[in-house]
Structure formats: C-alpha cells, structure tokens
Length: 214
Ligand code: B12
Image (tube, rainbow, N blue to C red; front, side):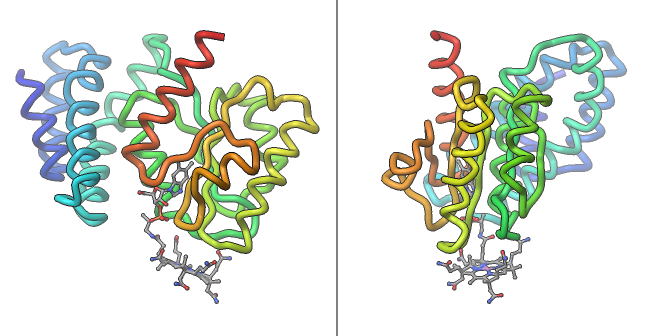
C-alpha cells in the first residue's frame, strides 16, 4: 500500500478514505507505527506548511485533522499495545477562567499527528490539574492556551504552581493563544511560545531535544 495515498487523504480531508485505507493496511499486516510515520505525519506536516503559507485556512486544517484522527483512532490502540514510545507526553489545556478551546484543540491534534501522546485537560483548567499531569501523568511538556487578556496572567500562576510543587524542573512549558507572544513567554518564564499549531510542533520538538540533551 502506498503511504502517499494516506498522506493525500489527510491533506484533502478525506476522513472516510483515511479510515478505510488504514483498516485495509492494518488487515494486510502493515506496521501501525509506519502508518503514523509515513502517512499521517507527512500528511499533517504538509497541512501545517499550507496553513503557514496561508494556502489553507482554519476550515481546511480542521477537516484534515478530522481525517488524521479517523486513521489514528484505529492505529493508536495498536501502537499503545506494542509498547512503541511516543515522541513525548504532552498535557495541554486552556488556563483557568478561559473557555476558548478551538486553537488549543488544533495544537493538540497537530502534536498528536506528529507522534506525541496528548493528554487534553480541556478548557478552564486549574493550575493544580497541570501540576497533577506532571506529578502523576508523567507529562514532559505542558501546553497552556489563553485567548483573553484577562486570563493571560493565569499562565504565570500555573507556572508558579509548578514551581511551588517542585516539578517545574522536570517539565517544559509552552504557551500560546492570540494575545500571547514571545515577550510574554519570556516574562512568565515559559520555555517556548508558538503563534500557530504548525510552529507548535517545531517548538515542542526543539524543547524535547533540549530536554534529551540534559
Ligand atoms: C470563538 C470565540 C469565542 C467562543 C469560544 C468557543 C470555543 N469553544 O472555543 C465563545 C463564544 C464561547 C467566546 C466567549 C468569549 N469571548 Co471569545 N472569541 C472567539 C473568537 C471569535 C475566535 C477564537 C478562535 O477560536 N480562533 C481560532 C483559533 C484557531 O485561533 P487561536 O485560538 O488563536 O489559536 C491559534 C493560536 O493562537 C495558537 N494557539 C492557541 N493556543 C495555543 C496553545 C499553545 C501551547 C500554543 C503553542 C499555541 C496556541 O495556535 C492556534 C492554531 O493556530 C475570538 C476572536 C478572534 N478572532 O480571535 C474571540 C475573542 C477571543 N473573545 C473575546 C471575548 C471578550 C470573549 C468573552 C469574554 C465574551 C463575553 N463578553 O462573554 C467570552 C469569554 C468566555 C470565557 N470565559 O472564556 C475577545 C477577547 C478580547 C481580549 N483581548 O481579551 C476576542 C478576541 C473577540 C474580540 N475581538 O473582542 N469566544
């Protein structure tokens, strides 16, 4: 089976096609990890590239993400069973007081498509829940989203809660959302910032590399 076909189905947002291609591939003995590495990731990378160059807009990205998810739903249980390690474990959420979750969902999907295990904590997430995701969930990266200028300071509070709980040193923190920028990330002591979901994957990869290097 040609992995390019799956990548194209993701790019064009053909979720039924992606689902049946994946089922057929699994039935004929294709390795689950190969489906992710050679089909889904290249497909979502291309979607990310098109989004960055403004060739794709939100609707196309969401439709592609849905196709990626349809395939991933079949593959994920097998990958988990086979003990293949994800690239890293991410806990993502919109900070307390903030209900906007569309951008956060998109970032989560892109990270998942890129090979991360993603624990989506939802919206309006209390700092303690992020602390718990590190202490008990084994998160390597925390991703904080905020869309309101009034909830941006909650990013600072969340990072402080991680410090208070003495887990700040074992986790990378990446922030994003329309009102957030690199200067704000520096101000609150986050390790990374990305303006969109495609860049979020690049920043997550860089943070994981940095962590691996010690
Ligand atoms: C949809 C929306 C809503 C929906 C949310 C639905 C949902 N399930 O998310 C509803 C109707 C609920 C809503 C409510 C409110 N909203 Co509203 N909302 C919006 C709107 C129109 C779009 C936001 C959106 O989804 N954008 C699309 C996504 C894809 O973009 P994004 O979120 O920016 O995410 C991208 C990047 O920022 C980045 N990113 C996002 N998160 C993260 C995280 C990480 C870690 C990284 C790396 C990257 C990253 O990647 C994403 C993908 O590229 C914006 C206006 C706007 N144009 O932004 C207003 C807006 C954010 N809302 C606003 C306001 C004021 C409110 C309300 C207070 C209104 C009210 N008076 O009740 C309430 C607040 C409710 C609450 N407590 O949260 C204001 C905020 C103003 C401000 N500066 O604070 C805005 C800017 C509208 C405006 N111009 O006034 N809203």
